[in-house]
Image (cartoon, rainbow over the protein chains, first blue to last red):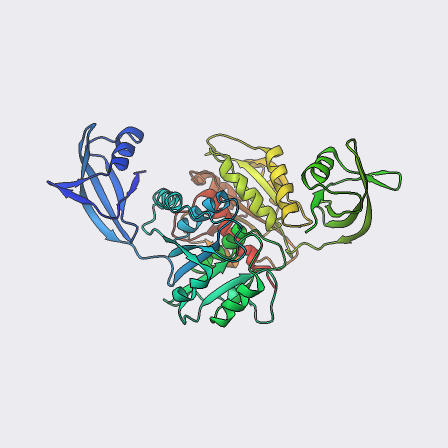
Length: 239
Length: 239
């Protein structure tokens, strides 16, 4: 199977474009590609191009685009997943990878009142996401960002589909099955850090129009809750 | 919050039971528990006991059961998840943890025709499962086992709910939403290794009454497919 590389912007050179240093290394050293070999190039925003290697040396590699296609997202909606930062940041690494494979639209690391330590590893997450996208031959890269909890309303606005996952079942709590993903709207789902949301967090959220989401009686870790909920939403997209 | 320990069999001593060496170490050294402190004890088969530490020394720790309760599984059915062994066994470590948090009934490591290298790490998985159960204060530990692919029919028998996840959509493929979890029956879902199932594997499965399961057009890694599918089933159990 042909390799896939990621490049948000390609640099045209005479009769083609130049591979980035990292791609150059990967293509020549790791995959031992030779002139004439084909590969995929994804821009992370839905364009996937088939390319052919036209020049390869120790110094640089040049390729030509054979054909390009726009790949539609698998989600009808745009799903933003907010995740409380964890004491053990490695627990989130895999979530980034899995959410990328599931092609969520955006991932926001959240610092809230109960955040023990804020480890927003932007570069690492970006790298993990690129690798996961290429590995799964996807064409969409999640937007990865950071937000203080109190600033989230500027993201959700008056959107009617903003959800805050809460371990206790409130009277107003909805089941994950009630979150609609079939409309082309923005959806926001926020997950707290280890200790969960504080009562103040919850009150702040509901006062901003967010709705409580209940994930069942079992005690799930943050990253498990994210995966369970997003997988449940993702499977709704399976035709 | 009180710690939870796991012990499938407790050893009665005069007026109580003796903690295992590992629990003893954890209780005294790690959690710095003192006589009078309470903790939970899970047997992994649904019994959860509240205990009180009655004796603690460098040599041993003794506790008494204050009360015991039977905790029902969250699943109406018994879900067995079969997973092809992977070249990078660490990719499955987290799956074990997550499936334990989701309280699946049984996890079977599968060696099949496309298995690159069989790394069934029974002890490690058992340890990860115990730790995940205790951490999430669950009372059920998945049964962890190994099977050659050809021997799986002896597990599924003539059970009508045995499924083989396949990346291509066959005419007979069902969506994950069609897998019923509401009956108190056994359900089996099998996931292939990196390269997927071979055509022969698939033919063998269907000849044994297994049904093809389709997880959508995105290319998911084995461990992601397991998580997406099991999370989708798990959310059906959320009341």
